[in-house]
Length: 278
Ligand code: C2E
Ligand code: CA
Ligand code: CA
Ligand code: CA
Image: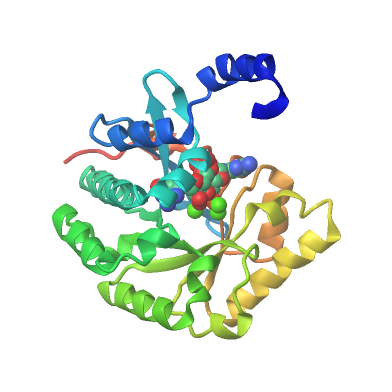
């Protein structure tokens, strides 16, 4: 576009470029975001489809920049991964999620399992297991209430990922495979991974009532998970019809806008009956 003529370039640089920060500018802003407290976590409830009760929440990061406003994680997480900033940001997410979940329990609410997303870059940090162990100690959260979400991409390096996952399991935390069905993980290896849960990717759930092949994929993942003695959750559930379909297919758990949007921590309480302090 630069070679199309001076005017075109000037127009481009003055309008579009001045409004959309370059990735270098974004990187600088991302660097400062942690110390300036610009991140917060939202929590999306996960329900058990048999009882209808909330048993867990997924922590989802939000960046509220003072001038740029709300920036979606889909936009800045890839940049954070590229630059390595995902490491300190991810540590902040884990610490905050464990701390708030502990606070929740201390308030006398029924204990919830908190799921935290781990990006590939974080997963392969040499001190990951140590870091998780440290956060659990600092926050005093029972490891049984922490679940780590990884993606299939992480399991490509079979030997290394199995070792890291086993070390994490030894801490007592749970592991789930996020966006399941979108990656390339070898089914033959799946049974060798010390994991607890598959999360059916929302792209399959979205059209499971309209598209026969998506319905088949959902059914197949559910029965495969059960054969491997794994728990299975469907994400991106937006309608009652989808929820009923999943219930019929005996999917264990569900998460999505139909149940609840991701909420600020304070608003979670509104979904639970008030518990008397004694
Ligand atoms: P994800 O882990 O697959 O998270 C699910 C995304 O789907 C979230 O988007 C959630 O708000 C959205 N969602 C939930 N229910 C529904 C629904 O019914 N319909 C639709 N259309 N969407 C639904 P969000 O919060 O924008 O996060 C996007 C992605 O950013 C996440 O995808 C995850 O990969 C990444 N991310 C978010 N927080 C973190 C974090 O703390 N650490 C890391 N490493 N990645 C994160
Ligand atoms: Ca996730
Ligand atoms: Ca997902
Ligand atoms: Ca995703």
